[in-house]
Length: 226
Length: 79
Image (cartoon, rainbow over all chains, first blue to last red; front, side):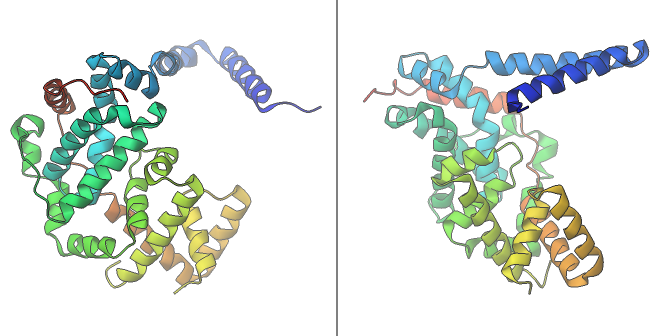
């Protein structure tokens, strides 16, 4: 008998439920918070408005919807800029500039659902421009955003000043742009491959190919220090 | 230097993209071929270098600042 994938997931869930029921009370009491947390997470995911809805609401005049997009994507945007720029201060500045640019140009976004990929493209372009020497405005109150203890222990700054950091940046700079972007974004845990593909305007398979080619060249360029 | 196929295999192994049977075969090769194992180790070190952790950031404060900056802008115009 053929069983559809969804049906088989249903069967697996039934099996899991039965398994839970068979466990002892003590196990159940410790497992319940986990199950409850998972269900809450699923609930939050279902309740969460889509990017497309938030974009449309923003365009209709609801600015709080854009605030939600800021909270949703700020970490990812900073991570992308940080990977490309090598230090937190510039990454925060570029992220601010990217959100302002995204807001002002929101009506030009053809697919509101693809907001994340579009925003990361803006972040990447601004980061690359910044690397080419364009000055950024420097309006952020960094002392409010970065805790004092972290100011003195920036792993990126330490990395940037080290010989290894310099070699890494030199090697990355020698990669074609798509390989460099794919490789840097691929290391960001919370960035889905589909979104990297949207950012680069290619398929997920192509992203993996760019990552592979980039890593291969980087290994060759840095073989004496790896 | 490894040939491109072996490099691709190691990258897929590193990313967990290989089916279990192929992963087992790669494990066997890694235990028998020092050159193959050394290349994997180099890829691991490269990934670690690329993955330098981000400095601690007060995300709520940053979001507040971003929202305030956007609030100063006029509404985006529809096409």
